[in-house]
Length: 559
Image 1 (cartoon, rainbow, N blue to C red):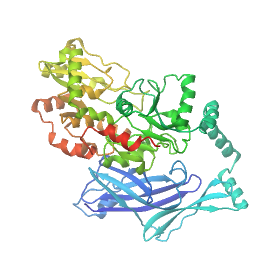
Image 2 (image 1 turned 45 degrees about the horizontal axis):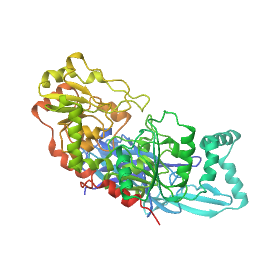
Image 3 (image 1 turned 90 degrees about the vertical axis):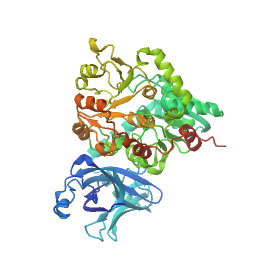
Image 4 (image 1 turned 60 degrees about the vertical axis):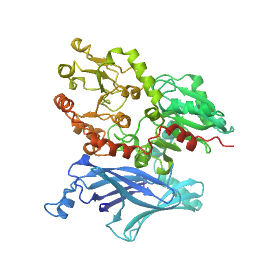
């Protein structure tokens, strides 16, 4: 393994917010990081039981390159800067009792390493204490100190006198304005008072050990990961299955569904989610109930959730979104840290089971049936090679989603490949503007954005053209060629960024315009040699048994 150098040379603890700001540098020796997007860094704080990841911003540090000598590697973006919210990080509270170490995760050009961080300041540093009230006469003391060059955070539970207690209350509510702000925040946390009132009573009901509830604001049926888990539970028997589903976050929720939601999150042993679900984050989930995030995407590609901290459209540092998951599933061990960071949960809560909806790629009967069904619905595809054009959206989210359709020149493609190929267009569900097909290309292009599952379309696809979509993970399981049409790569990196440097990550050629795309197809230069490494990085199992593993490991019926 290559050597890593990493140090903290800037430190500030802001007592009022409980934030520990850290700056320094870290780089993998021999891996140049002369561009911002060629490196991904995260701060890590851990003890023997838990491990949390917090995204760090890259900082320009030409001084590090100069220190390494002329003619050697460029480490201009070896710098980092970020903060750890010591008051809110551990299950939405201060760090649990014990000693916590600080280190860094770095991915430079695909070389991933976790490394401890030494402090270049005073080796005997002892910063001011920060006391967080737990309850009356009980407080948590957090302090940072140097130990043999390392920086550690100590968390200690301690008793406080009545005098100290009121002093702490006063320090945490210094002004009337601050106190009013606090009250306003508490009201916002309560949300709908009637629901909170109902929850106060329903959470005292008995938890049904065999009760499972499926919750989604992005689908109205059992599809995606839900479909496979639902079928597996039914086949095993013994489970009481319930669901509350609606097509989108903005779709209205009936009064019955609102009260059913409170009842089921109070009494179900397992709560299953497949996407962002704002209603669940309003409630403090009771002990003995598991909230399991099945997530709708595979692998780890573009950053999401708390990995976007500090970026436009990213969450606030103390947002409660995602943080109450007790478990989340991923496709491989190598990406557990990224999901832990994105959801703001400890890495030990992320489990590599594989993704249920990818089981279809190992089911020959399902494959044959799907191909037959699609050819029956769309017979014009049967005797042609198929190019699947499946880009992701631009914009900050569902409300602002769009795509630059003019970049994808259909007429040029048709003139080159109209006789042998057919193009399927599958837009991201967030893009509401329809794809306009010119009259001259009606026989060359078919818009299948209305098809719910893109995975089914992959079975009849010969070439996938995408950009920053996670569909590349599923396509890799079929070992099919891919082209990455990244005409706005620099802008996308600046606004969204990735968990891995894009150029070294994607398993296929990157093109910036339609001419580059045509050239790759003509020459059949699909860089298929990259597929094997890509598959082994993002998938631990290739057996079609991910659904079984999820149920076996996370959804057991307890006596």
